[in-house]
Amino acid sequence: MSKHFLHSVLTVLVLTLAASNVILATSMGELQANVPALAAQLDNVSMQLHAAILAKQTTPTITSLSPTFGPIGTLVTITGTGFLPNNTVKFDFGSIFNVPSKKNGKTLTFMIPAKINDDCSTSTPCPTDTWQNVVPRAYSVAVQNAAGASNAKPFLVIDASPENAGKIVRINSLAPSKGKVGITVKITGKSFTKDSNTVVFGYHRIENIPSKDLKTLQFTVPSQLVYPCLPNQPCPTSTLNPTVPGNYPVRVFNTKGVSNTLVFTVK
Image: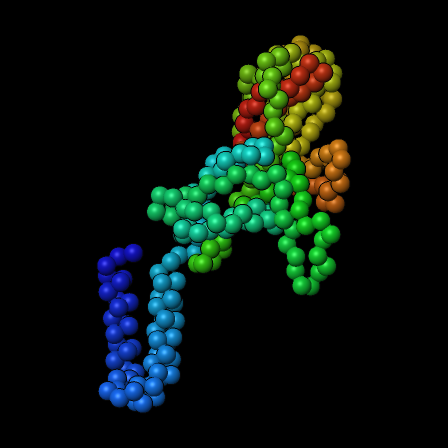
């Protein structure tokens, strides 16, 4: 906070007290008579000071997330402006409280949770189980603090890769590595099977992809992503999500194992 701003706030304080015409009495009776007026004036000054401080703060804005995808437990750095010492990260409908900012209010870091808490509003019945498991799909990330609420950016939760990922089944390249929805992408690698490969694009699964030479296969970037229906979890009521511009992890798995991950960028 600049010296000029503090000087301005103190000037407002002095002028307001001067304008109040509160007379400090020499006798106890006169002092007691002036206490309510003095308290009212101090409340007014406090409100003006609080308003001046909020006016100086800017509404938070998110410019980027890093990374933009990952499994539960991933540390995500939010870069932007207007972050305060105490912030709340909104992860879809869940809230992660008391997240401090760094680098003069330009970054903050949070961890992708395993569960998030449902909002409970007065207009709808509260859910019987207020906590929901975080599953592979897209989640919105936003920041709230005393200065307001930010824009939202998407984060893609994906399955955690097994320890041996990429040791047997492997992706060497994507061609192209960026493009629009509907483009055909060629994957070059090794240990693909003849007709039972699955490409995981983000969390969306494209199944039964053949590979004649066991080294290459192709898939089309989908226009919509289907939420997976996981074992022992209720299937999502809305299963489709449009493919929006951004980075998407690409993996291949088959009966031999799970590949490493490369990134395709949707323009």
